[in-house]
Image 1 (cartoon, rainbow, N blue to C red):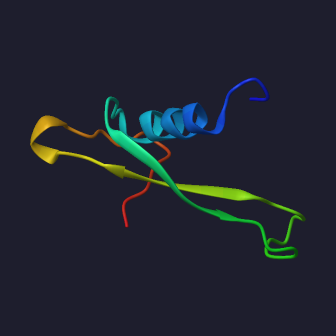
Image 2 (image 1 turned 180 degrees about the vertical axis):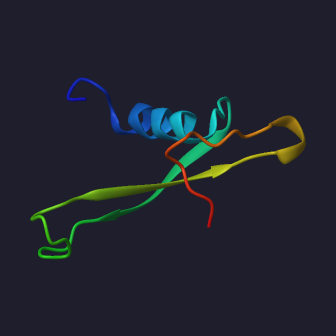
Length: 67
């Protein structure tokens, strides 16, 4: 998605995985060490979400896994 900013992309991933929306989302770290991934140069931007569990009912997508 070349025309979408980082925040909107992260929010879309969160929604696609959990069906959660209208939650607090914040960038916490960017990872970009050279040779950290076997496929080549990869930059990863990490986000965290604060979710008031009594207000939301997350639903895992078919391709999300539980830890």
